[in-house]
Image (cartoon, rainbow, N blue to C red; front, side):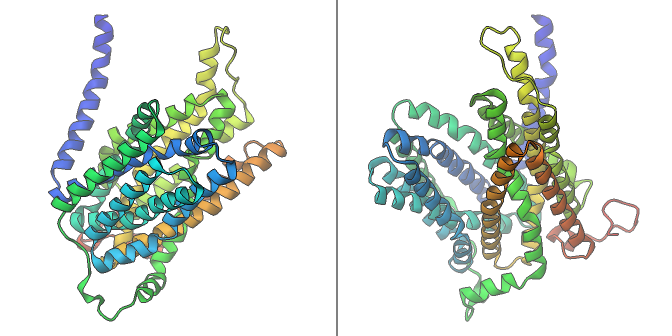
Length: 457
């Protein structure tokens, strides 16, 4: 027993070092940044404690037909993705704080309605309000964070991703506890969380945004200006594929888990692994990458890793692992682990790639916007990404079906790998042409030696 305790000490020490570095990083920022991080953590806890179980409640608890469930969930997604641009532009015009508060208030109303209504029109209204809420506060939170963090926005967005993933990890677990009582309790507790967050942000969050020089400009003029920003538009299009790849954590990977194991437990493991890796490693990974590569180079390397993440699945597809045996089979757990190994490997690589890309991606958007109309730029970026995810998921589903029907199970994973490499090549090309810069690079003298990684070719 003593040897076992001794063997665990290095792991505990490593976790301690990682958490201490994260807390030091967090304390180095001022109160508004810390409030925004808590804001996103609570938003995700409230959202993910409810949304993963909503379809089951509608279909099982209320006995709705599948098309009704799909309609309600589709309305939520459409109201969020379709309104991102408007939400971002409004944040630039009336300020970030009012839009954050408006979004939080709508979530309170939307989740509260889900607890008490049962008719289809009322459920559609509640779902639409929850989606619209996200469209209002998401661009505003990111624009506020970028402005408040200033030259340290890469570090701030690294912490943002950490808190974001922590909310995804905690939310479903809390929802699982409450749903044993009643789904309505999940809705009410989620609404209460957003109400408490609303009160905290209303009292403690300073006003930001509302650019003074906007007099005489229309919202359509702002959108036209963003769309005419060629480097930003090209970067947005180049990054769309990365969102399709990241979304496979919700689409392709769970399908593979069910095929490989015949159950749902592996899906929970995937989300737990992804969340824990981000919580423990995001700050260290960002610091390591930042010390070695310029932001565009970091994004490119991250996208290559994102593409490579699907190679284990492609290999496993052409060399199938044994499926888990019956309960009495003494090798059942060994076969379970072997069957799950390719998907877990892909999950780890996807998570690491996202940890590399995300902070520098967010900082690059601010740079391409030249620090102005940041809410509008984030809103447009999210809208384009959302459209790309919708189309990409449809094509991924087609590829999965085609691969099964044609006896080519590696087809979808090969296509996704190619998509990631194409994204990496596009960002690399934009960087070579000098289209991508960050605020940090604008204030830092260029590296004199052309042989160093940080020098432009």
